[in-house]
Length: 427
Image 1 (cartoon, rainbow, N blue to C red):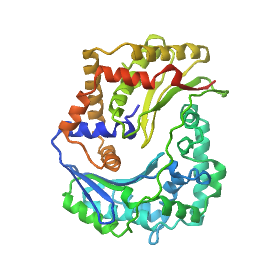
Image 2: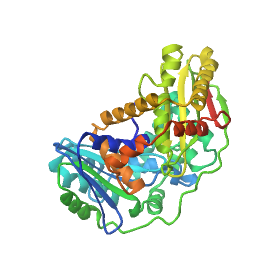
Image 3: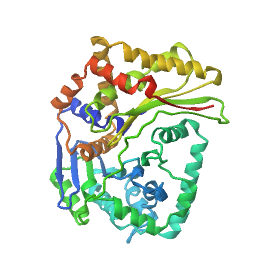
Image 4: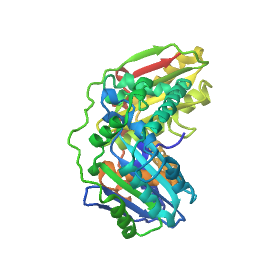
């Protein structure tokens, strides 16, 4: 299981600073776009633009359009066709990518340091000058519909989307990021342009960079290629989520295994308890083989090949869940075992040595994961987007060490409370 950006953005920054005394420079352009850069000694560089816009910003009839834009934004600009966009980076050995989540969109590239100007100009051209040719739009609709259909063949992935619908019933967060085939087929150029006009704001954009150039040079390039974007601030705020009702649902599926997700709403990205929630998540079902749920379900009882827990923090809410797949005859027992682990961590306070070990394990995991500087660039950008700062090593170290066994117990009783849990089963 990979460490996911949205779960560990704050800690990943710590891990990288833990290894070396690095300097992170930040600034803001006249139009409100923020910039963040870390200079490192490496032949490879990483640059991206991160926007505080995702699928939860869509209207009902727009479901899937944020992700659709992520695809068609590469299909042509005022001066480049789709082939020339891809070749501009790939011809010099680099690569470009993008992603869409519930709350953000990112376009980014990896390249040799000597190609900073080329790469930043290209991403600027894509963001500012995409023309969204109708022929390319129609072709990409089929690609995305195939992507939607592929999820239907993968119950271990589909179940998370359905669990979002169960948890956030009726709220924009509940909607599938990919949309529906019917809605995807309805998208036109004017719909794309309207969504961009309504949701891309310069005060909610961050240019993030990790590479071997001085900050002064990066800032000059940022001003050259992004400084002329007209300033625009978000006027309307997102619809807040505050109406959670626990749910239970069983779905008949033609699969060999049963699949199950159990979870609850959790803390937002701005909540002080989010750090303790990250630690609790790692203790229960993090990437280590010695997580409590892995030891219980897999090692001691042989009931699941894959068991994991996940914590996702949004701007105003969050979600914690546990997923596992097991044979049908083991399903009820596996659920009981998961809830037994929840009960234990709710009722039994962790010892000081246990807690110290858990902290050390998490920091070690993230230190290793932060070797990937592509992820580091995105992590820095998202952290700056959310908090408008990057905490120093002493500040972060203090916050981690300040997590107490009593706080873990309090978080467990809030998030893992039996009566607050929702359950979705594919069987």
